[in-house]
Picture 1 (cartoon, rainbow, N blue to C red):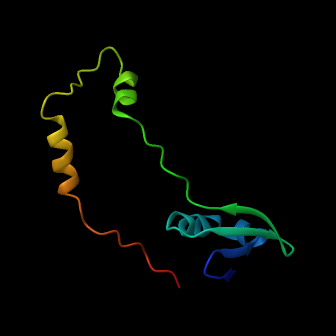
Picture 2: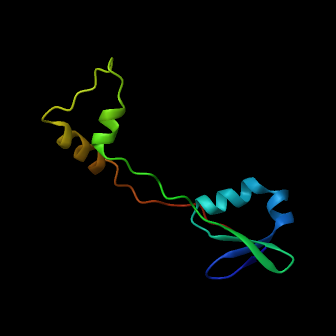
Length: 94
């Protein structure tokens, strides 16, 4: 594995040998360039989380759902966000 400031370069053999470790590094924010010979073949980077609008979520509920958005919903969501402001401490890599 070769690391530079922009990306980690690995061979396809390194990827096949320990794909779980490579995916862990991608999930932690690394960009991984997979090479065949000395030529780049693919780039792995973390997927962007899909964000849905509240209206999409509400529309996806079944007719039997008892979910309700009351007047205090926004305050409840903000309270939850405010109570979970701990910093992200990703693992350090060797």
